[in-house]
Amino acid sequence: MRILLVEDEPDLGMAIKRTLSQEKYIVDWAHDGLEAWNYLESNWTHYHVGIFDWMLPKLSGIQVCQKLRQKQSSLPILMLTAKDRIEDKVQGLDAGADDYLVKPFRVEELLARVRALQRRSPQLQTQKLQVGELVLDYSTASISIKKAIVPLTAKEFQILEYFMLHPNQILTRDQIINQIWQVQAEPSSNVVAAQMRLLRKKLTEYGCDDIIETVYGLGYRMNLSSSYQ
Image 1: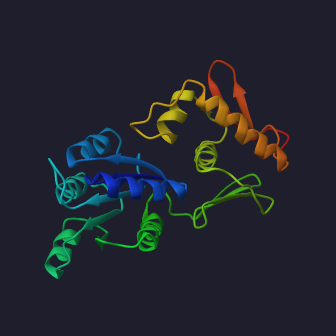
Image 2 (image 1 turned 135 degrees about the horizontal axis):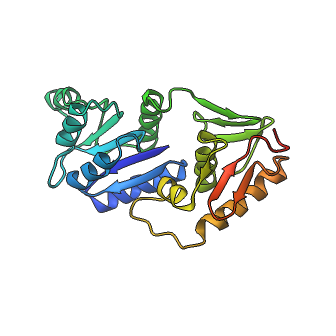
């Protein structure tokens, strides 16, 4: 699942990003409202949840939220702010935010609210995704084969989810990088190949052979006609 975090405080932004990444979310971090809007305007369906600070340079979190709703976007949005008056909460919710979290907050509460918004995301209405005997459980951020949990890293989880959402479809290196790595990141040229080798090795250890194949010169494909199926 991909989250757009919009926070201009460097320490807080880094802490939130680190926490979410450890929970296997893909996090793009924008430092002001205009940067966030540029991310959103280029691809409305790219994100599943937005976490917006209220007070931001260039465009406030409230303004970004309002612009989204004017575009009929249903992206679930959590508003972060130090404003704790009832009037402020009402203003944030009336602007289109789905939830409101007052600073300072505990990490556990942030994650619980993200999980609640995740359940509202129109792209993640089902809590489980199954392809053959591969089962992805969004509620526990885990992937299992024949009920055995596969110990995946966050990146491996995200890559496998991407393939499960696009079975039998060739995914290029650039598509995988754009989907999995952060907007600001510049991964090395062989990072996809390296990640794919590790992922396929783990799947093989759990009896899932050859489900992800290399299509030479094009990319990779989750082949449901393989012996696994």
